[in-house]
Length: 139
Image 1 (tube, rainbow, N blue to C red):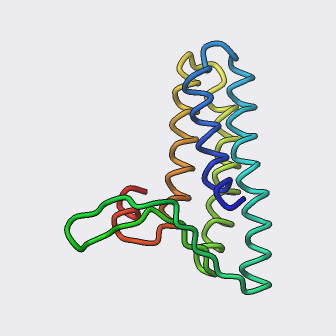
Image 2: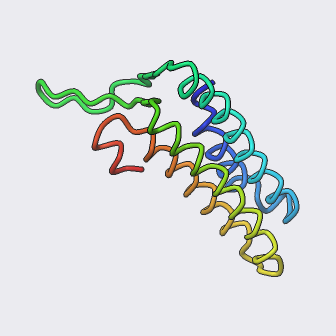
């Protein structure tokens, strides 16, 4: 469930990137906003668990880099600070995406712009939930 915090905006961006020409302008707007809305809902649920119940969570997705004895894992760290940051990043990104729908209304490259907005949102969530410096740099 926690992976939907990142997966919602990321899947919205991937769907727009693959199907953007076929779903049209309104479809692009709906997919991007729906992906971010899924992330916001899950962020509120995980914010309740972490901030009010004190359930700090670490999710190890898998081994990423192994060089000699140095092992770096791709993971998500959900503590109080990262939960607060996710609760700030996702709703603000959703408001900006909603504003961008009107701002980019007549542009012929709106699909590409909304794709970039979805990727930016997903990478911001990766940045604030990173558990190591390499993942933080990627975000």
